[in-house]
Image (cartoon, rainbow, N blue to C red; front, side, top):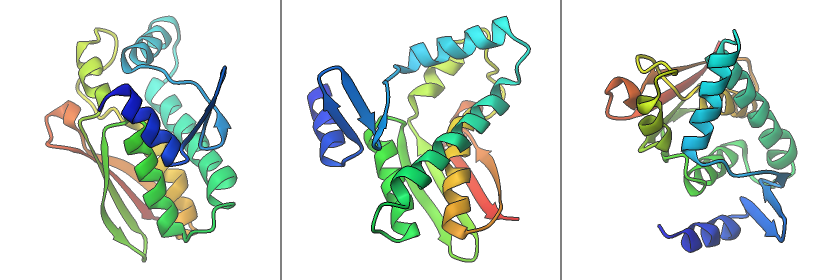
Length: 177
């Protein structure tokens, strides 16, 4: 998709609002970071600190998901299930890869898949980042918080499959504890 088409889709979906010098994503001031720059940032964190990078990404994703629920979802006049679909569509429009709800059971299970994530390519090229583990910790954190809202309960989440490990697609599983 051409950049112009992507911007038009973002504006149409209300996922993004742009005014000269200001970008709002989901109604929150934001910036866009290209995948290679994002991976370089992660490499620098790994090389300069003793931080558990993947746990940091998961917690940051949970924070972002909570913002989405609190600032966007609660003010939106949709059902919780519809909000999940809107979040998935927003992720698709914003270039996270192709996101899809694979399974939803109201009793407490949500499976979301990711294919063609731009992060896979750049993680594999990195000498500093692990190439033998799942990589969508941030997105898992986002879906963790959104699932807590969806099911109104504490959640356990995991990345069951990952293209970084050779799987056909990445699969995030969220289920009630």
